[in-house]
Amino acid sequence: MENDMKVQRFDSLPLDATYFTDEGYLVDHPIVTSVGIFVYHNPDGSERRELRLPEEVFAEKSLASYKGKPIIVTHDAGYVDTDNVKEEGIGTILSEGYRDGDDVRAEIIIHDTDSLRKYKMRELSCGYNLRLDETPGVWEGQPYDAIQRDIEINHLALVDKARAGEQARLNIDGQGRNCMKGEKLNMENTTKRTDGAPTPEELAKAMGVDEAAFAETMKTWNGYVAAKNDPDFGRTSFAKALDTAPYYAIKVTAGVHHTMGGLKINANTEVLKADGSVIPGLFAAGEVTGGVHGANRLGGNAVADFTVFGRIAGAAASKYAA
Image 1 (cartoon, rainbow, N blue to C red):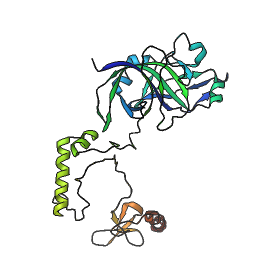
Image 2 (image 1 turned 180 degrees about the vertical axis):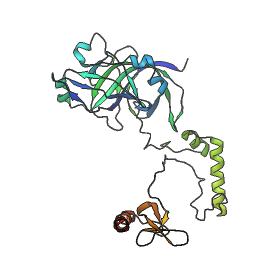
Image 3 (image 1 turned 90 degrees about the vertical axis):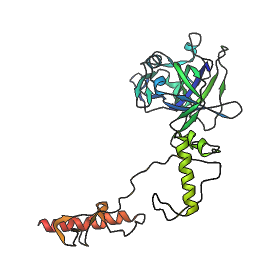
Image 4 (image 1 turned 30 degrees about the horizontal axis):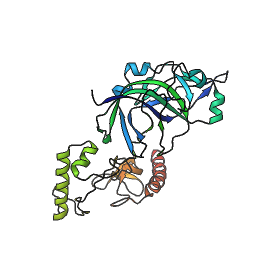
């Protein structure tokens, strides 16, 4: 496996809520690491993205490696072993790691809480050894440079909240390990390529979709724009053609904002039949009704709708029941 090499990584995640024992020790079951792409910063300022797959993060051997490992303050100590654990250790990971969705949690205890208060640390950061598979690719639409495999925990560190763009290159133990500090990539707020893609095919590759199909879709759209005719969906207004590089894409998720259309009512909120006659005893208000807003709803009008017609419906239904 000529693309593999042994390295060490330090990754940061926020510290969860904690509690203190009667003796003053801190105990918690925080998230200690996660599945996803972690971003590291090279000495020249460039980014390096490394993927942590579920099968690697949740591997039995990897999860077992958490138990008994020391907790230290910052990663300044580097690789922790019997030579420095007494000087550096402030606590211990009590349990093996266990899966919680896409995250790993573990039970921890911190005995030296004075250090916690003194340095006001707000994050937990794993220090671990791994085999780096230098095979680039795309995961969930995001490009990565390498895959982290055979992950084995060395220690857990309390660190300051990581700063965006922070660089940290650690040469720690004289054993040739390549040590870098990373942050998990925010998949929700990151464009697929920060530099843009030179072709539709390259953009499709970055998004993780079929390149040929995406390129054909772009070509079809540009043809509709030129002809001012959309036979597929009947569009009557067109923006510019998407035919000039660089190309960008963002992740967009649909959400329910307001339901247009529904039961037809009169001013007394009585539900009407198709012929316009009243259905006795049936009243409606709010988003289950239609026609109140005309062809489209103005922002904020839904509040007035359900407030006004809701009161009318309530009064009308009460009067009908009496």
